[in-house]
Length: 185
Image 1 (cartoon, rainbow, N blue to C red):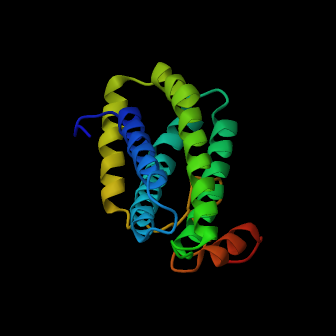
Image 2 (cartoon, rainbow, N blue to C red):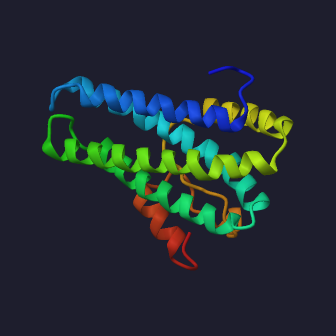
């Protein structure tokens, strides 16, 4: 990706890279250990991409679009669903039928999500944001992806104060339970 790509170009390039990886995995025999290795790369890239969207794209959408809060909630729901699938996939051996089923679901969900963003969200944001703003956000998104460790820490922008979010060192299940349970942390 160009180092001067704007936010939407950066995220679209990520989507293209994911689709390429998905095609590669579909071409590999079921149970091939190389599918597991490539899946690990995909999981890492998807998490980094999701973190960049949650820190830069979604706050922009929430602020600039008239239906921004509703759009962002739908997008975050998609992220939560994919993150749960990624966690299952990460814990499943590449030689199992379950791995293949999970991988198929990840491919389906990510492909749908990316297509929806590119068809609806990105054009809407491009219409209400200057090229300079998008370039600056592209720089920040690249920095965010580089700093991310590729592990789900799902702390999307919400109305809930940051000091009440569960610590990232907890397991995904513990964090979700703590996040959804009032008074728990």
